[in-house]
Image 1 (spheres, helix red, strand yellow):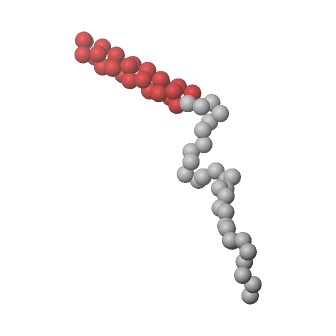
Image 2 (cartoon, rainbow, N blue to C red; image 1 turned 135 degrees about the horizontal axis):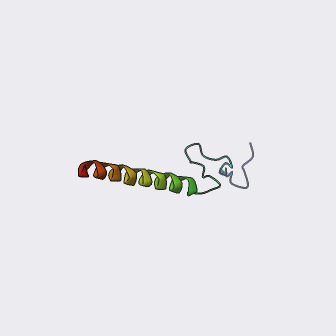
Image 3 (cartoon, rainbow, N blue to C red; image 1 turned 90 degrees about the horizontal axis):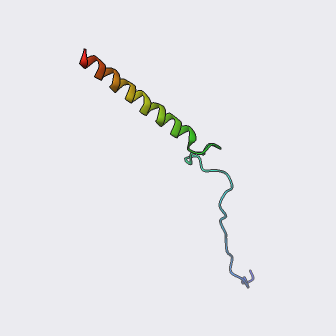
Length: 57
Protein backbone atom coordinates (compact mmCIF):
# COMPACT_ATOMS: atom_id res chain seq x y z
CA UNK A 1 0.00 0.00 0.00
CA UNK A 2 1.32 3.45 -0.90
CA UNK A 3 2.09 6.06 1.72
CA UNK A 4 -0.33 9.04 1.70
CA UNK A 5 1.23 12.29 0.52
CA UNK A 6 -1.27 14.55 2.33
CA UNK A 7 -2.69 14.04 5.81
CA UNK A 8 -6.28 12.88 5.95
CA UNK A 9 -8.42 15.54 7.68
CA UNK A 10 -12.09 15.27 8.59
CA UNK A 11 -14.03 18.50 8.99
CA UNK A 12 -17.25 18.58 10.95
CA UNK A 13 -19.57 21.35 9.83
CA UNK A 14 -22.47 22.51 12.00
CA UNK A 15 -25.95 21.54 10.93
CA UNK A 16 -28.33 24.16 9.61
CA UNK A 17 -31.21 22.55 11.46
CA UNK A 18 -32.32 24.43 14.58
CA UNK A 19 -31.44 22.85 17.88
CA UNK A 20 -34.41 21.09 19.50
CA UNK A 21 -33.74 22.71 22.90
CA UNK A 22 -33.55 26.22 21.44
CA UNK A 23 -36.79 28.10 21.92
CA UNK A 24 -37.99 29.89 18.79
CA UNK A 25 -38.72 33.55 19.22
CA UNK A 26 -41.97 34.98 17.98
CA UNK A 27 -41.98 37.48 15.12
CA UNK A 28 -43.41 39.88 17.69
CA UNK A 29 -40.41 39.50 19.94
CA UNK A 30 -41.23 39.95 23.62
CA UNK A 31 -44.44 41.89 22.96
CA UNK A 32 -46.69 38.95 23.88
CA UNK A 33 -44.80 38.31 27.13
CA UNK A 34 -44.85 42.03 28.00
CA UNK A 35 -48.63 42.22 27.44
CA UNK A 36 -49.21 39.12 29.56
CA UNK A 37 -47.08 40.59 32.36
CA UNK A 38 -48.99 43.87 32.17
CA UNK A 39 -52.31 42.04 32.41
CA UNK A 40 -51.08 40.07 35.43
CA UNK A 41 -49.91 43.29 37.10
CA UNK A 42 -53.27 44.94 36.40
CA UNK A 43 -55.13 41.94 37.83
CA UNK A 44 -52.98 42.06 40.98
CA UNK A 45 -53.69 45.78 41.43
CA UNK A 46 -57.43 45.16 41.00
CA UNK A 47 -57.35 42.33 43.56
CA UNK A 48 -55.42 44.49 46.03
CA UNK A 49 -57.94 47.31 45.56
CA UNK A 50 -60.84 44.92 46.14
CA UNK A 51 -59.24 43.63 49.34
CA UNK A 52 -58.66 47.20 50.48
CA UNK A 53 -62.32 48.09 49.92
CA UNK A 54 -63.41 45.05 51.95
CA UNK A 55 -61.22 46.10 54.87
CA UNK A 56 -62.79 49.56 54.98
CA UNK A 57 -66.37 48.26 55.19
